[in-house]
Image 1 (spheres, rainbow, N blue to C red):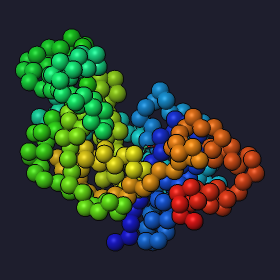
Image 2 (cartoon, rainbow, N blue to C red):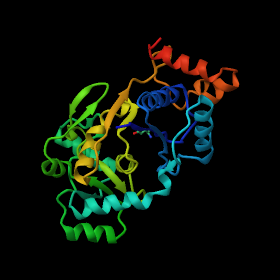
Image 3 (spheres, rainbow, N blue to C red):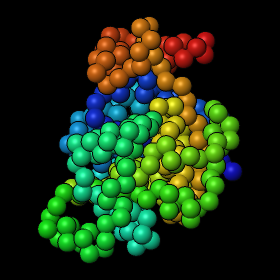
Length: 283
Ligand code: GLU
């Protein structure tokens, strides 16, 4: 079966050398296997994402010679679909509204003396999990601020043991406990990265998720969502991240290594990709 893979940047800044490396990994997987290379803008954060960065992504990819198959999918145009996922999980009693502030959560975690952080951040102590249906409805109706959290233990109980195949690390047993009851939506943002990315990978028929290894831990949550939603399970390739000579990963604030800056400095696409390969230790 021909591979369908995707490059899914968030247009919150200009692409840098690390993105070129990620796009190259994705492009090569599609080329090698006679497959499709999809482009998705993960722009659910409407405050931080900007049209000029979206346009710059298209320009940079075209310059690198990576032409994508089919139309670009923009997540900001599909909030209804993600809200539908939440409704489904709500009806299945796998999410619950949480009214805690971050401050309250930290205080509670500290009082319990448990380790406050997992690899995806603070692990929620479950304070609002046991609220009655009546209290939930009352507080929501009163307009109280809230987030929707996944009841991971119930989801895992229903789905049973889960695994995924990672091209970089082999067969992995999912361990969603590391994330706990993650936030899947907020009162004012009807979705989250976890919901939008797994929904879209399924909808777009993605068979290989190519992305940086900084997102490896999130896959524990994604695998659980796929199971409870009955979605297809792609293979994963969590690739290495590029670091500069100082050993630090490239970030959007590193202006000197944006693809636009390198282009303006006279580098051609082959040189940029060769530089990425070199930093990755490939040549
Ligand atoms: N939008 C994410 C990022 O820019 C990538 C998500 C993914 O590939 O799953 O880091």
